[in-house]
Image (tube, rainbow, N blue to C red; front, side):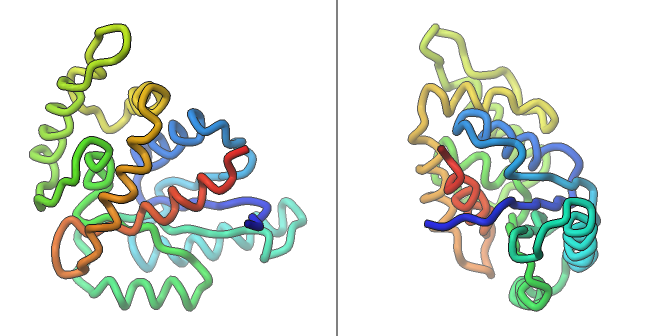
Length: 200
């Protein structure tokens, strides 16, 4: 399959999404030059607008063609009151792909461990993730982690290094959450699948 020169991922959040994707790239040996990040780019339509702006700036700064950059807007539902279909249409109109998590990105992370269909969010969802981190035993007999921390996702590469099939399982689990009227609803796995196409 042909690949673009690079992927630009713009996120509304500061740390979690980028940290997770960096760990996936690390364990998959994907060059950091292929996937670029711009964090804290606003939410929803503002995020999509900033994707367009960042793409234009990258084209100018790096002297590359627009077709050589594939741009993704990565966001959670958060306080978004509109319809996902309208947001997707706005992204498509601006040639931006949408990696969406509802209610939040951790709704995808927990899919690494189990097909999780509850509409938990915030501390409740993070508490559930902590339970799975404590239950997962590494080859050396240690537990994967004690508690979930949004800014420290180094455990992801340890987990995927020992159990690489868990990422494919998470993608399959997330694909089953494709009902826009129920949570969790996820399309972030489409971005992860795309990044994995750059695996050497």
